[in-house]
Length: 434
View 1 (tube, rainbow, N blue to C red):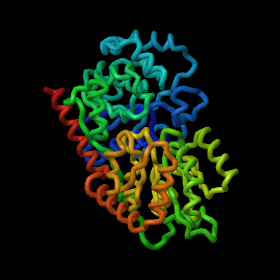
View 2 (view 1 turned 180 degrees about the vertical axis):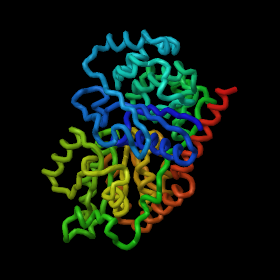
View 3 (view 1 turned 45 degrees about the vertical axis):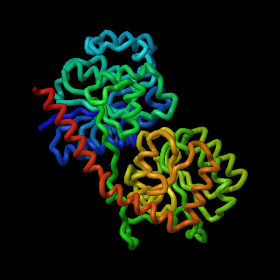
View 4 (view 1 turned 30 degrees about the horizontal axis):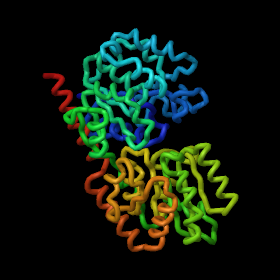
């Protein structure tokens, strides 16, 4: 039996693609490949809590604090009231850090992003409660990345990082981040485009990079044709009684500029000029910028907007979310900050057409005019035109959705992704044992 330590930035009930990927791998590898899985993570639930005490955290005694789907979770509290100089001193005194030979500039940048896990750092001796064969982290560029390298150095075990490199976002192109990536034994890129950028931008050796895409449990999104007590009817719940035949456009993700949520709001007036009978559904954590823009358009044109947050849902497979994917006519996420975009796969699993931005890794994920459409990032006129096209051209929408469904069923299930990950782990573990 192999022992694997996962060290993500956050873990369920924190919700995002990176967390879902780690959780899916941990649970499948434990169940199907008999791996002994341990998870280290922070207590942060939202991104703000990685750096600020005003963020949302999970506390001891709360549901999911120590166990998620029978896997043991060790959560370390984020230390907030500590200066940057104190952080530097604590990290640099550790022999396992010294052996990494990273510059102060690199360490400072990772410390700025958090989470600073002082309790783990102060007790970073050779772990006795778990003897692991490999440690795998996500996602770049947060401080748990450095802690993972330190644990690997301390125990002389291989380290793996799935960075989810958002290379289209200027924020992630800080060269001081790149040093740490060179220290991993293996980097898992979600797309060949990401691999290309890792080589050209960071100078990562090609042999260190393995391309493994993201996945979806498509069976979760196939609902029975007949209504049952367990099947939720989204339009019946949220649409006005006389408007249940209205069309629907769905966004699912972090409601910020990077994900394209603000651009969608700006596109709504132009969509409504050409197609009036449509609801716009947003699922995901809200931001101040999103709420401000939504308030602005609601006052001007009174669009039909349904705005749900994680507080309205019970998890990744919440019945309302699955119903929304199944009942929507178009899935729209014109993001520039996706290393892959698991939500596209969920839409395809539901047989729906998708629209993404022609930037970053998305052009590799979405085949334009084959299983979806591409728009220019933050071009709300382009977004509006493509949405209207799919709302009006039902045959085109159906064909794009079916092509996407075929793709995920044939090659993008979580089981396939887990098998490739298992093979990657075995190569590293066997090499370490030689």
